[in-house]
Length: 179
Image 1 (cartoon, helix red, strand yellow):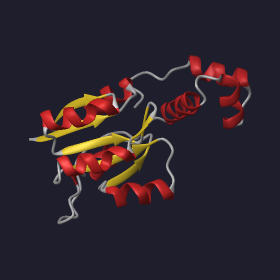
Image 2 (cartoon, rainbow, N blue to C red):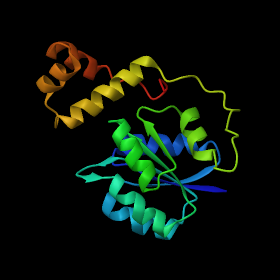
Image 3 (tube, rainbow, N blue to C red):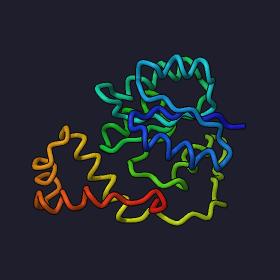
Image 4 (cartoon, rainbow, N blue to C red):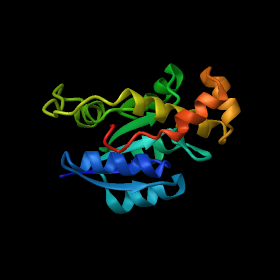
């Protein structure tokens, strides 16, 4: 069985990922703090790791090397809400096997987790609807809002929308069914 450690400070996202990937044969554990991640990895001994790049005040990039030293054969995917070519190159250079931008759908994440260097097969037999555009927008708004420490006015400016429009969108949280 594949064992997956999800290192993600967003508890809701970690729970969603664990639930979705658990349905596809992964035994999942979540870790929400960078300081606990190495201990959790040592105890759980995962075959796969999903690592968030921004863990509260820590940077997930700094965990790649120690995790790789602890678990040299682990398949590691770095997730980020702030994708850039520079961080993608750095993540791969440090030892991540893949780099994905949030929000990520289950199919893409499974493909990244289950592709190994010696094979080119992917996990293609999933019949899942794509992410709902409203859900994607809401998650993006949440990321920008978190970056601005909850400042709605600054978030609205960065997103190019009126503050009241942003407040209305924040009140209309998509349901869990709206993947």
